[in-house]
Image (tube, rainbow, N blue to C red; front, side, top):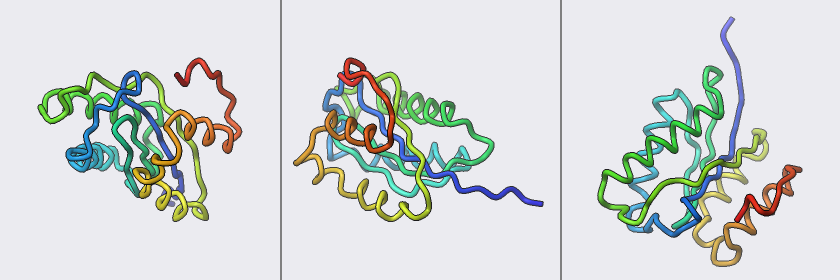
Length: 148
């Protein structure tokens, strides 16, 4: 018998100190690089987007891949690439930690659309308020001091 799975994750992480170090002009290059990391892990990217200070990734997770290792690989490898590429001169790294939420197939299109509209969405809601809202919507307890 084969292995069957459906493991959708919405992953969110920010730049160090939430500084705006991902310029719009180069974000597509970063997203393509991260897509390559995801593909190498045998995972499928459904949507990636973000702003100058954070990224949202919606992907599946291959059964052989641990979530913590997956996020670590994305952050470490993209950080090295960003620092060596000379197109992200202000980038000093990613913030420690991340947020990850599971979703069902019924929510897939809604989440893809939400991530697709990140740049316009953040004209109305800042990153910290967005993260608090998502944590609360998913019933995740958090300490405010760790969000700053």
